[in-house]
Length: 292
Image 1 (cartoon, rainbow, N blue to C red):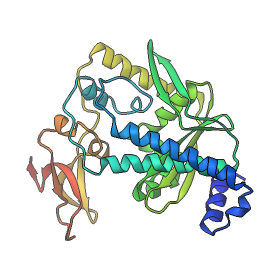
Image 2: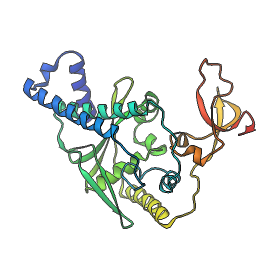
Image 3: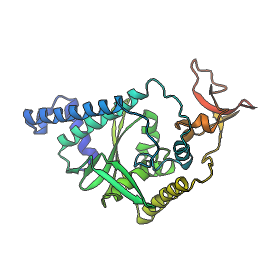
Image 4: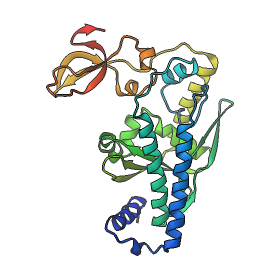
């Protein structure tokens, strides 16, 4: 039985009040629950006491576009996050704690996890901590919006390779190569529906070398102070497959903390032509033919 099927089987039993079929003693289940609770307690303390830090390369950011890294390195002003940002972070932490418990209950071969990892590139040590290792393969546990779950994660590795604004591929390769272990993939939970998909990930040596070469170039660019250059350009905006006469920032820019420092004239505006009571909003640099 593959990993995804094992996870689904455990959740199916728990959803139908059949935990007795898991062959886990109550004392052992209580021990697992306390462990998950302690992990979430640590996550709460970490999130609630987080402070801004000086820029450094980390496993979690090394796959991001160079322009974002350059902005962070020069100390560009970050946008203030929405009030619900902390809830999203805690939701992700809670999902990781729950999934660790589910993996224990599924009796998969967990061979490690929460390992401190270091990867040497361009004379620079990139540090991080992985999520879980199963059969000596490295997996990341992710929470996802319904849209990303359906449009990206359920479509597997090719969809992620085609559009990876958060640098998840580089992250996973860094965690695995830093330990001389194979990549396993991602265990992804939809935050809305609770659905789980396992995205298996195998990379050729050429693919790994290309990813590490890209990261090495970013390190060199930061260390040598290369001139700033945007990695993205505005895209045409369409509604019902018709061009609205507007240009908006691509999704990668929309998630960036520095989009207003990079695009000072961009404005968050409702999508033209929409008749919805609360139209979707995008970051526009041209709105209905008018440059902003």
